Amino acid sequence: MEFILPFQITPAQDKISYHQKIFFIGSCFTEEIYNNLKSLKFDVLKNPNGILYDARSIAYALNSYIENKHYVAQNLFLQDELWHSWQHHSFFSGIKKDEVLATINESQSKANAFLQNASWLIITLGSSYSYQLKETHEYVANCHKAPASLFDKKLAVIEDTKSEISHAIQNIKVFNPGIKIILTISPVRHIKDGIIENNRSKARLIELAHSVSEEIENVFYFPAYELVIDVLRDYRFYKSDMMHPNEIAVNYVLEKFCDTYLDQSSKKLIKELKTLLSAMNHKPFQKETIAHGKFMQAQYEIAEKIYRDNPHIDLSKEMDYFSDYG
Image 1 (tube, rainbow, N blue to C red):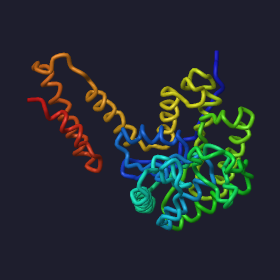
Image 2 (image 1 turned 180 degrees about the horizontal axis):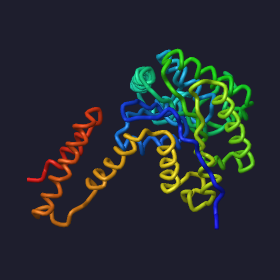
Image 3 (image 1 turned 90 degrees about the vertical axis):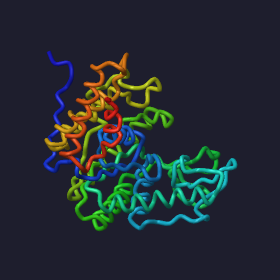
Image 4 (image 1 turned 180 degrees about the vertical axis):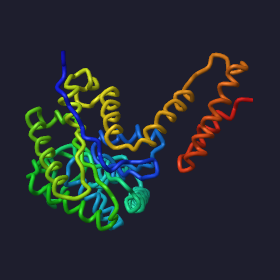
């Protein structure tokens, strides 16, 4: 008997390899996938503005990286003793204005350089809702817990967000002609908007992503949302807040992503690295035994061989750890 509907993802013709740089931007689910690939030694960069949810904020941020926008004091505001940027996560906020600006502009420069040389850009859209300051009509990426009375909450029109994302993507393709782009929808439920409202929001993002990927060359759609909502489709695959996919769900989506987009050499290398990293997390009962020394030496030789075959991968931490086998 079949207990789930068949769900096949066509393997991508263009593959990701360890030699390539991958730029991630978007919702907190982006960070989950990034963290996994980062731990597996991929050359990755995530969310230079911090977590972003709506398509308008993502498009704005991408355009700012292309032009290497330099933020100035007028771009910040003071609230609750901290300086904030409406376009950045509170991670960037701080007591000293100059330090906040320096951190933001350093992140901008890093994003500009990385995006220019990236082979892949992965955009995860989280919500169709955005917030606009009533006083200035500026759209914000983060409200920083400012009073709700300062904002108008708006459900984006598909045609508007499609235009903004498409324009940003076209700018990126001029900036970096060889880049390939993957659009995906976050399976995180924005329950604070309401269940019905969340589904309406996600529906608009799905239509946006499919439409853009069908119309622009080298833009692809990966069904992370459908894998969680339609294949796993159970609250046991969510954390206790019932909104964020748990570790099992994230690993499942990552497995399908790797099956779809990674080349064979990268898949083989992942297996080797997972074995090595698992050995590194091994906690011996008796470090002084000859057996443990031999184990450490064997793992060091494995790490050394992986690095010799893949000098672009940083295994210095692992090799330092396993070198202590005397």
